[in-house]
Length: 72
Image (cartoon, rainbow, N blue to C red; front, side, top):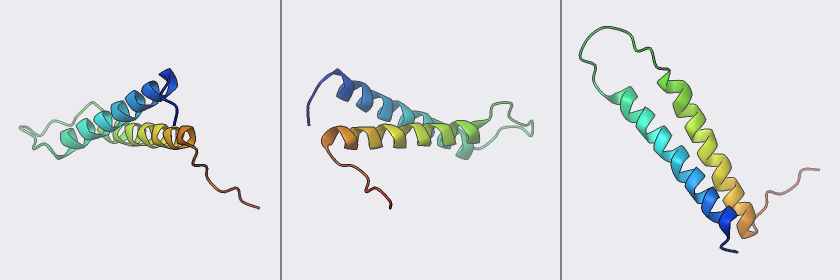
């Protein structure tokens, strides 16, 4: 695996996606103090952070030389 700028950006993107998903998971599981509904869509950002992290990890694996098998 070549350690160039693209690798470091991909690692940063994967960690940012994981941090976003982790923060949204924490906000979902954090107990509420009142009965007002949240105005921030945490589930949407949890999903987007997870997809972003998965895409970055797949790109990192492609940079390392692992590729998905092609379907016939």
